[in-house]
Image 1 (spheres, rainbow, N blue to C red):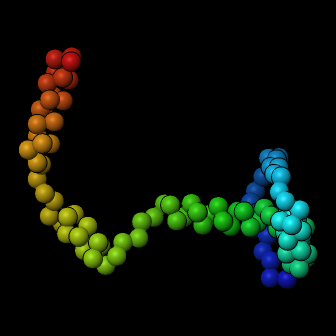
Image 2 (cartoon, one colour):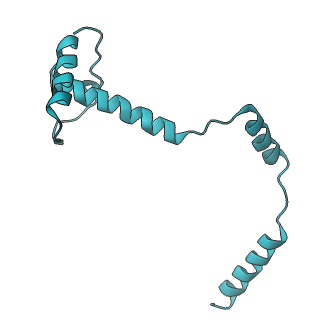
Image 3 (cartoon, rainbow, N blue to C red):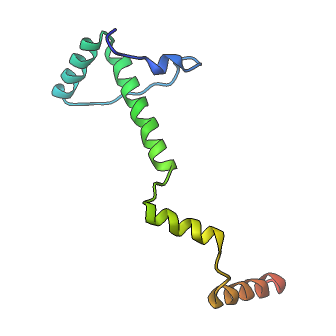
Length: 103
Protein backbone atom coordinates (compact mmCIF):
# COMPACT_ATOMS: atom_id res chain seq x y z
CA UNK A 1 0.00 0.00 0.00
CA UNK A 2 1.32 3.38 -0.98
CA UNK A 3 0.87 6.21 1.48
CA UNK A 4 -2.26 4.71 3.00
CA UNK A 5 -3.02 4.17 6.66
CA UNK A 6 -6.03 2.00 7.45
CA UNK A 7 -7.31 3.89 10.48
CA UNK A 8 -10.52 1.89 10.63
CA UNK A 9 -8.53 -1.35 11.05
CA UNK A 10 -7.04 0.05 14.28
CA UNK A 11 -10.48 0.33 15.88
CA UNK A 12 -11.37 -2.62 18.13
CA UNK A 13 -14.51 -4.61 17.56
CA UNK A 14 -16.17 -6.75 14.94
CA UNK A 15 -17.15 -5.49 11.52
CA UNK A 16 -20.87 -5.96 12.10
CA UNK A 17 -22.37 -2.61 11.01
CA UNK A 18 -23.42 -2.44 7.39
CA UNK A 19 -23.54 0.63 5.14
CA UNK A 20 -24.82 0.79 1.59
CA UNK A 21 -25.18 3.58 -0.91
CA UNK A 22 -26.08 4.16 -4.52
CA UNK A 23 -23.89 6.36 -6.64
CA UNK A 24 -23.25 7.29 -10.24
CA UNK A 25 -20.99 5.04 -12.33
CA UNK A 26 -18.44 7.86 -12.77
CA UNK A 27 -18.17 8.36 -9.01
CA UNK A 28 -17.71 4.64 -8.44
CA UNK A 29 -15.04 4.49 -11.14
CA UNK A 30 -13.13 7.36 -9.54
CA UNK A 31 -13.28 5.66 -6.14
CA UNK A 32 -12.10 2.38 -7.67
CA UNK A 33 -9.23 4.13 -9.42
CA UNK A 34 -8.11 5.97 -6.28
CA UNK A 35 -8.32 2.78 -4.21
CA UNK A 36 -6.32 0.87 -6.82
CA UNK A 37 -3.66 3.57 -6.94
CA UNK A 38 -3.25 3.21 -3.17
CA UNK A 39 -3.31 -0.58 -3.31
CA UNK A 40 -6.44 -1.05 -1.21
CA UNK A 41 -9.95 -2.27 -1.94
CA UNK A 42 -12.89 0.10 -2.41
CA UNK A 43 -14.44 -0.66 0.98
CA UNK A 44 -11.23 0.09 2.84
CA UNK A 45 -10.71 3.26 0.85
CA UNK A 46 -14.26 4.58 1.30
CA UNK A 47 -14.41 3.63 4.98
CA UNK A 48 -11.14 5.37 5.79
CA UNK A 49 -11.87 8.51 3.79
CA UNK A 50 -15.33 8.77 5.35
CA UNK A 51 -13.91 8.15 8.85
CA UNK A 52 -11.26 10.83 8.38
CA UNK A 53 -13.87 13.34 7.17
CA UNK A 54 -16.26 12.42 9.98
CA UNK A 55 -13.58 13.00 12.60
CA UNK A 56 -12.66 16.35 11.05
CA UNK A 57 -16.31 17.43 10.91
CA UNK A 58 -16.84 16.50 14.55
CA UNK A 59 -13.66 18.30 15.62
CA UNK A 60 -14.64 21.41 13.65
CA UNK A 61 -18.04 21.53 15.36
CA UNK A 62 -16.73 20.87 18.86
CA UNK A 63 -14.47 23.90 19.00
CA UNK A 64 -14.92 27.59 18.45
CA UNK A 65 -12.16 29.69 16.97
CA UNK A 66 -12.09 33.34 17.98
CA UNK A 67 -10.32 36.24 16.41
CA UNK A 68 -7.80 38.04 18.61
CA UNK A 69 -10.31 40.83 19.22
CA UNK A 70 -13.16 38.41 20.08
CA UNK A 71 -10.86 36.46 22.39
CA UNK A 72 -10.01 39.65 24.27
CA UNK A 73 -13.72 40.49 24.66
CA UNK A 74 -14.54 37.02 25.99
CA UNK A 75 -11.64 37.02 28.45
CA UNK A 76 -12.54 40.51 29.68
CA UNK A 77 -16.14 39.40 30.25
CA UNK A 78 -14.96 36.37 32.19
CA UNK A 79 -12.61 38.46 34.33
CA UNK A 80 -15.20 41.13 35.14
CA UNK A 81 -18.69 39.71 34.60
CA UNK A 82 -21.54 42.18 34.38
CA UNK A 83 -24.15 42.03 37.08
CA UNK A 84 -27.68 40.92 36.32
CA UNK A 85 -29.76 43.29 34.23
CA UNK A 86 -33.15 44.61 35.29
CA UNK A 87 -34.79 42.26 32.77
CA UNK A 88 -33.00 39.27 34.29
CA UNK A 89 -33.97 40.29 37.81
CA UNK A 90 -37.60 40.64 36.69
CA UNK A 91 -37.55 37.23 34.97
CA UNK A 92 -36.07 35.58 38.05
CA UNK A 93 -38.66 37.24 40.28
CA UNK A 94 -41.44 35.91 38.03
CA UNK A 95 -39.89 32.45 38.03
CA UNK A 96 -39.52 32.49 41.80
CA UNK A 97 -43.14 33.55 42.20
CA UNK A 98 -44.34 30.70 39.96
CA UNK A 99 -42.15 28.12 41.66
CA UNK A 100 -43.16 29.27 45.15
CA UNK A 101 -46.90 29.44 44.40
CA UNK A 102 -47.16 26.44 42.08
CA UNK A 103 -47.92 28.63 39.04
